[in-house]
Length: 239
Picture 1 (cartoon, helix red, strand yellow):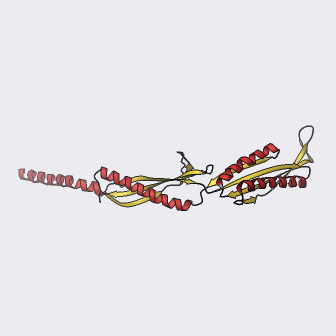
Picture 2 (picture 1 turned 90 degrees about the vertical axis):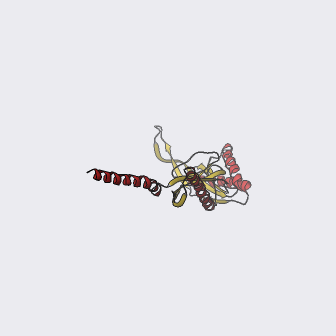
Picture 3 (picture 1 turned 180 degrees about the vertical axis):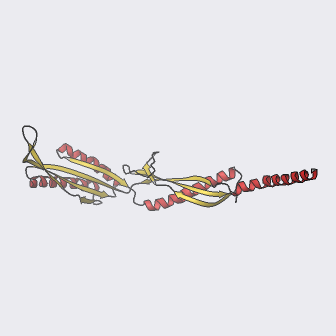
């Protein structure tokens, strides 16, 4: 019986020793990958923009109101050409015509037309982004001359975003690898191959802005912007 217990103890000791020796290898072999985020950003300047001017006029007849709106559009067109020069594309948008009914003594609408109201608009597209800013301010000033005008924009865009995105993907991925390498070195492990990579959404924000959205941001209010990109990369370790 004593011999049996001795043999049993020896077997148990061998099993425990094997587990102690094997445990570090199992931990490394089945270790979770290093998951890091790589970041890249680049300042850019808009090289295209658009602005829409809306004029509204009234008249006793539809024709009178329409003609008056046409004269107002001519002033808008002349102002835009004077500021932007030949580098401009103007597109007239659909016209809105509305008849306004007279009100009776009780303030209710009647079947008699009081006047007609016509709204016409022009959209300007240009690469002269600084001139577009100036045009927006000048158009608002036409209200001081009795013209009823509203302005949408200006909006500023970056035309070569695809090329910028590809460069940022490279830079952000490289940044992620550097971070993963630092983490592996700091823990005494070897950085293995890349096992997964996910690109985040592009964020185009104002300068010095920390604003982000899960679906991405595209700032159109400013000429000078920053394009930002985050990628998530996973690397094996211990290989």
